[in-house]
Length: 396
Image (tube, rainbow, N blue to C red):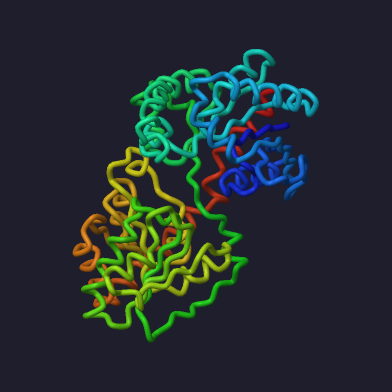
């Protein structure tokens, strides 16, 4: 089967899209990824046996046009023009749209050209969009209100042949709030590739002279890095050897080095920059305690598990997490870490101190992770997607 994955960003790099494409190729399908081109990459490239087709747009134009997608027709028709030609010449069987904005483009092509339409939702879009920074300015709030993403989401989901989502609680949200039949939704959690981690051959090289905390990912106000750094004020008195390693891209107004300087704890904070996958995983393996604090006011985050939690699990690392419902249930239910109040530096400090003082508990967390980690690897969680495309091919 020939599958056209449509991505509203530049490819590479989108890890989930790449993992899906490679899994489908391994199972005998041909995958084309059609994406934007911000950086003057080749218009066509065979990347890991994925046929990547790109068409040019400046980042500035994309940043202006994409948020206005629901309010002006140019963006939609630009995509349709490119896709109509590409789908026809490559004899595509299925259109696989990644994320919600281009769903109406997919439906137009389904109706006009007879393609099967798959909507692959990396996010609970209609809820997540409420928290986007560009939709929370004065003008942005007006654009968001006029865009009516919730109504658009319902309409497009009912038009799709199949919907892919990342966790079971989001599937239930679609069933309860949109009225989507259960059998129409496939759940594919965004877990790590087991083979990829094994090939890294990571060694146990903890620095016994320090107690190391670790965070990797987006560095923004809603990741509570500031709360962790503030917790170091009291922790550094009781754990003078404490160290907090931070890796990732810094969002404007959330530089951990400046926050550490403000609270006079700079010597305990080590910003590592944006790391390669190997380096990120090596620092993760060397840590004593891995941290992921997310806001509880997000419908999506309360219904999903972020990839870094699954990565911590694969490395059998004890973890400290926030009160988001599904992650809390996952961590406490499997006894692989502690839950703290992400907004309270005192609660964070208490959780870290408890881990520091109770090494037997930390060992139990690691042992419990070892028992379940093979249930949460890509090779296993991608199977419903592979099965669906296999069944679709046989029914043609």
